Image 1 (tube, rainbow over the protein chains, first blue to last red):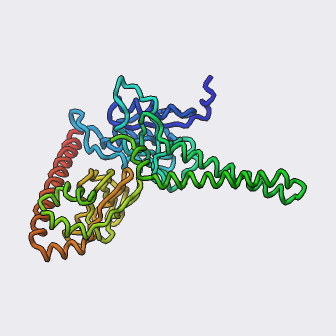
Image 2: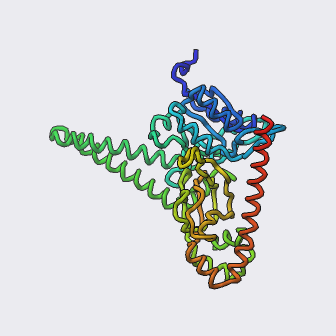
Image 3: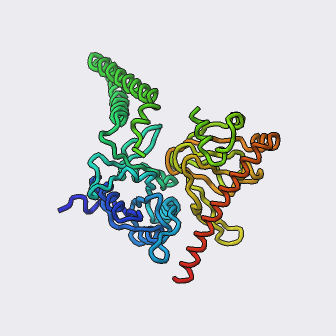
Length: 228
Length: 159
């Protein structure tokens, strides 16, 4: 039995071609507890699907056609942003994710590259994106999120460095507060002082890593950009 | 140098000589926007002409639901690198007719519209060469818009 069935995050995916849609579906469903419940090939269709299915998240390709005209010719292949905004404006439409760039998705055997992941450009870097976290964090006014697809050979180094520095700052801060609290009791000074010193050291190391990564931003972000 | 190269690649500035491009470079300022950022909004004063250096920008227009009442925004064009947008700053100092939203992290060259108009008035060669190319670009966009309109009307009439 699927443990996530009851609480699965419901997603609708919209892209013009079935191949690209399949790859976006595979990409989205890599995250545990995420289930694609509907697909659409044009803007009119995705807005209708979002109204009926009421997904928590709708993932949209920017070059989505408005609709298909006579003989199946796609009309106005630039409706991705409009569709994302319409879905997000619906009271029960949930959040919309506009994929800025779907080019890195490979077409080889229609199988998704193992390293491919959703990411978001923040503070000058591409950072991995979790739909579940995003849904919890996003403010009501921030319901159209601009994301990207990373399909590099290896995850960029700065992802790891930034994650490490964040962890050091959080845990260092907690250790520092705990250490200071223990020192206030006077009896536990022997335990509190090294704990506070360790926490302070972790914070300084975390800040130093952040500083180094930011200094290298130009070269690292070029390295970390998804390929054109 | 990188910015100058971007300017030279743009259709509007490609006929200009080196010295003329240098004069325009003096009016340029590089700007960066995050994905989802708005470069300018519809009806705001058109201060700058923009050349897209990197990224992708959607140009959107509010649709009129009823007289005086605006509905959601509709994308009318997506700008690719080295293309120009924000023509209102050059043609006349009118408000922008569209909203420019970045679809991905974007770098643009913003050319001061008032100073560019003054330069074109002072140096007629620059003015003529720029307007000649600008009109060609606008004509292409108009043609694309007409084709789209015809396709959609055909679709509506057969639906």
